[in-house]
Image (cartoon, rainbow over all chains, first blue to last red; front, side, top):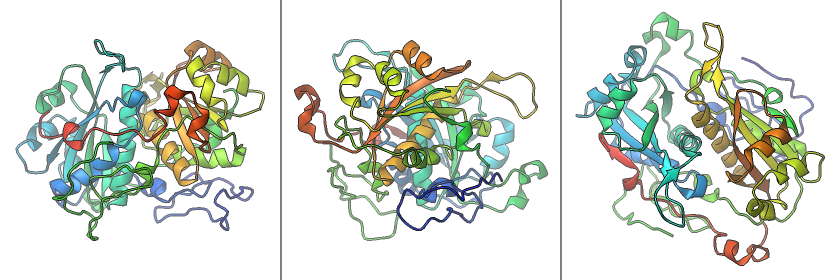
Length: 215
Length: 215
């Protein structure tokens, strides 16, 4: 885990500065809500179920995400483990993801419309921001899930044609990710190679990401 | 403002259900953190300045966003109003955005790397998730800014070549948005057409966005 020298950081909150150490050992370089650190992507789920009401409460935050021209391009198709849609969506994941995602409580396919209708009307035009905006909705979903006591793990490893067929993907939409949602299980049920990765991932320091004026 | 019938909603938190009515009159259909509703994108900023430390505390949340293979493709170039970088970045916005964004405290250019290096090494390969993941980082930034007392407004209206030149955009990166950050100002300083839009935007109902099994 990368830890930075925070001794000289000032404190934007006005409270006595404490690095936001969380149970998962991530450390923030500023006083941010612990939810950003507590959200991470395990692979071990303990096969607890989720109700449709609970899942909709997780999705609720996503619809409040910002989007270019408020187009709200994001769309979600979900399956609860054991329902009639599960096999096709789960089966559309790459085998390495099928392995662990089978114990998740729900799988949510996140897609977005690649076009939008301008306020002036007319035919839909390409929406350059559809993927970026769908990512914002995913982020709201993930944080809200954390706040509601759930874990999420977004997967880019899926067979796009299989997922498209499974969810009857509409024209002019693309699938960005399939998200596993569930309660965390023990690491030791995972294959050895995945056990070693079953911990919150580190991050680059902000100094490698943010530049004053010019890159 | 679209309001839905919530009388039959159950309550995922276990607390007595109250629609999460916020000062801005948005209503959620489930008990989510009010931050999702309180975040919106005004155009009137009151020209309060921001310090670099405050801005970095806003950006801090963004680096904890999830990304495919933890590639962290997001990059930020920022300018504080009045510094030497301001004119070129502000000048890269379309005129309609220059008009109001000139009173923001900071402008943050959000870009992302379109390629990533696989864990197995070798030359970088296309990262299909770079825009989606950059959008997640933007969402964390925006929510954290709200929590820190700031407003954000992401703009897709910019001259891509002008912004690229202004920030010395690296190869294999693209710009997704320029984000204005500041303290909210009064609506009545905006041109009439923008005054009418100076309020939190509504959202589609979840029933139009989320589907069980198949779209």
